[in-house]
Length: 197
Image: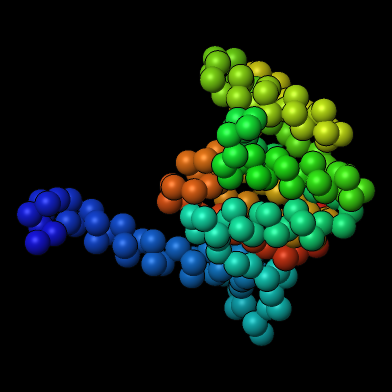
């Protein structure tokens, strides 16, 4: 029985997690697709006719993000802008982050302009080492890489493709985040949002 393994408190936490996780897609879509109605409600006005969605969005849970990211990189025609807190690749080891790096390098060879912003911290030596190693490999392949200022944390996980498609959420570019962790991100098709990002 589940209660025997996790206890009643643990069982309640498992149920709570399942409820929250099942509601996440609806919550994200509601937030993304109804900003005008929300704003009108804040101002105390009637929302009037239903606003037209300004974006199409798709929730990317767990490994779905990796598949969508590779597909987006492969379909990019003009530019890719990527910002990540942690991009950990290990040359020769394979893995999901290594596949992302290889696809970015292949995009450059197709003529796509690729820019990457990575975190550089004042005191996170492992993070700095991992990002610096990946940055060197990206630069060697013709990708423009910027490391943020050490006194400001860039915790963003953001990809903008062809100034139209936006991927934003919780996924770092690590084996654990792309393959094992419970993560939630969104794929958004919106030129106005991509321009803001």
